Image (tube, rainbow, N blue to C red; front, side, top):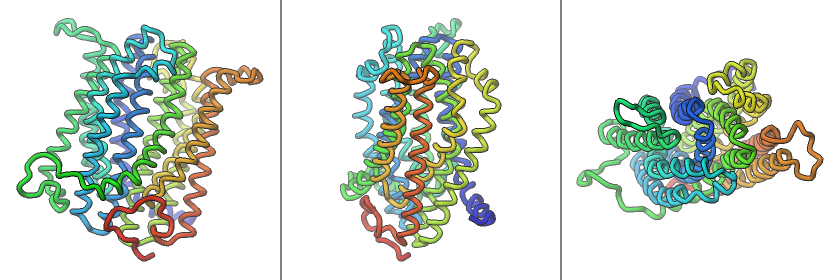
Length: 478
């Protein structure tokens, strides 16, 4: 692809990508702050955080995937300048968030399946349960804010989300510090990992209340008819046609995201069987790659937004162009960033922990960082662009085969020497990371090749839409 064309697409993606990047880094910093604090507090609490966060993410991201399906749908309405319908779809996303939050909170309150998977000791299990109870209270606010984020990203307003996420982080840091270590003059006991959960819950609800205030006060949202005359509070009644459209796209999106995330969170559960030090080292390495992942995630959101808007406006050529350029830009940026972090890996890991045994457990895992991160970037951006075309079902199959079968299944076989013929160098946590890298490479190849085929063989969404189009949105001429 000619460099000038790629540069032009990068200039279009950047204004949408950088606020998402900063905002998502702020969100990930919630867990980074907790990891750093507990790394200096107690190894058992750090292990409990790894298991508890893995359980919470497994629940949250699958449900979030259903909610953020509002983004590709609203993006098409926005591209077609059908703003009141975009606002109505946002209301339906909030209904979904509330219903799904009830289901997710029930799972978090009774986390025995996750504890059984991790073989957590009684000391760690008690800490995990306390932490997850606090996060169960945070879940409704987190899912409602996910709907707000999906809506704002789709209408090219990511800065409105970024500012609230930064404000949440600014509150999270001192609050977690205070609750983890306690404050004797104030009579506050040291709560360890439970303090992290309580701080997150408080911040999530304040963040959602601030989002509600922005939606009501900012004149930008007036054309979307979010607050019609005569209704000061509450949501309009559910609209089943709009809900069905969002579920048709959101359920496979949620399944894809659930497979993707559980392929890595279940690594934490299995690695926890190797002991607190092993899972603590894995937690640090995983937090590092998760932080790096925010860059391709931001590009993926920007590319998906522009593609959906182009489809809504009927410009199929531009939709194809910007979508594929997003994949290429993400791959190049990820390879560069991964190489830099790998070269400085010892200094980076020292920022996470001052415990030599934990650092020794984490250091071998980042040996796979460059390939891991590059493949992760490609698969993420390709999947997001496919969702903008309202294609989400086939990626579920690709993810299941690559991330669950190759990544998680292969990792279990390597780490625990299934069959008795695995080289000793691939035993333990390292085996999981080798297999996870291989799974990401397979996913990246499958999704990018499928995206390329879609863009070459179809000129408008009606020709390949494997999910329901939002009601009232006809396929524009290509």
